Amino acid sequence: MFKNLFKRNKKDDKNNEVKLEKQDELDEELKDDIKVDESKHKTGFFEKLKQGLDKTRKEMTDKIDGILNSYSKIDDELFEGLEEILVTADVGIKTTMEIIDKLKERVREENIKDPEEIKYLLKDEIKRIMTQSGGENELKIDPSPAVILVVGVNGVGKTTTIGKLAYNLKMQGRKIIIAAGDTFRAAAIEQLEEWGKKAGVDIVAHSEGADPAAVIFDGIQASKARKGDVLICDTAGRLHNKKNLMNELNKIFRVVEREYPEAQKEVLLVLDATTGQNAISQAKVFNEVCDITGIALTKLDGTAKGGVVIALQSELNLPVKLVGVGENIEDLQPFNVDDFVEAIFG
Ligand SMILES: Nc1nc2c(ncn2[C@@H]2O[C@H](COP(=O)(O)OP(=O)(O)O)[C@@H](O)[C@H]2O)c(=O)[nH]1
Ligand SMILES: [Mg+2]
Image 1 (cartoon, rainbow, N blue to C red):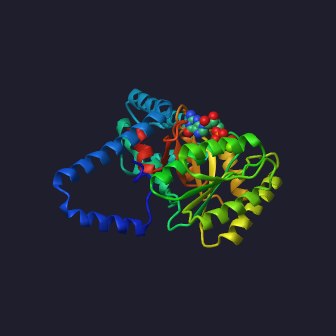
Image 2: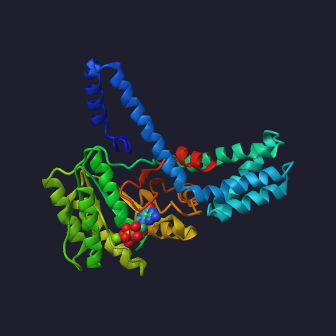
Image 3: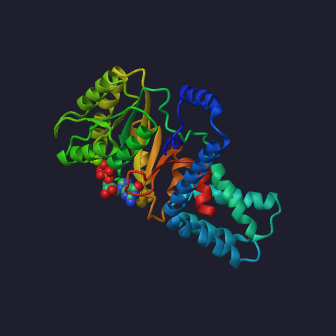
């Protein structure tokens, strides 16, 4: 079922192609069945994202529709109204200004008179601003082996995201090992062990208070010995002091570089969408401390602050790679700009 969520590596794609070619004997009827299943799955997936973004859509698109309907001509007041809606939806001042300036420019250049047309321009501009950095929204885990270091402050959803991700990747047939690098509290290790059981993947853990870098070291050895495809590492999220955080993370990075140079590396920053602009501040701090390669944005369900995705992608040039849309094991999705913009603007 989860085969198509994350892109497989080229080699596997080739294998699949070869397998498909050999399926010539497979009668047409069966092929049609497969197609139907895939499209059903894609729809369910998109619906879930749409549902998750319900509140954001109300906060943003419904209000935008309201304002566009109430104006008969395009003027400064209309732009101010739009600006306010975007800022309230946590798109961020800088990104909002960039979008509005571009809208004004296009309205002038394209001689647009009807407020209704602004909606399409806006959708277009949001897509453009989110893709202009050219950042890849796909997890960089192929070819294997790969290491995903999961960082972020306490409570944002690191452990939950690791559990869901491990499950997703395992369902694609990858060998996954989790390293319990948050050794600060015993409960954190137990929580991860629970997720490991649910996802059906191996976990490497030490006891509370152990050196996180030593846990990651063992995780790497286990991953090599068991021919793991992806090693996913939890880390402690204590942000009480930037220097401490930097020291702890740097020690882990050094171990990974030294012990697993052949592995692809992802440093995934987990952010809680419900915290809005605070998530942006966290991203700035972590980006100074280490090279973040992607964002996992959690709790997109039930928040009206989904606009934060736009700011992360455009202002900070950090590609959002995964989004959490619920607490269950299946509630994690790969992020894709087109789907996101469609889910918000419909
Ligand atoms: N609604 C919702 N809750 C989430 C999501 N991701 C995580 N959570 C919840 O956020 C809380 C903190 O998660 P946890 O993984 O322990 O955070 P950590 O401290 O960063 O490891 C838990 O109650 C999770 O169930 C999500 O995508 N949606
Ligand atoms: Mg945790």
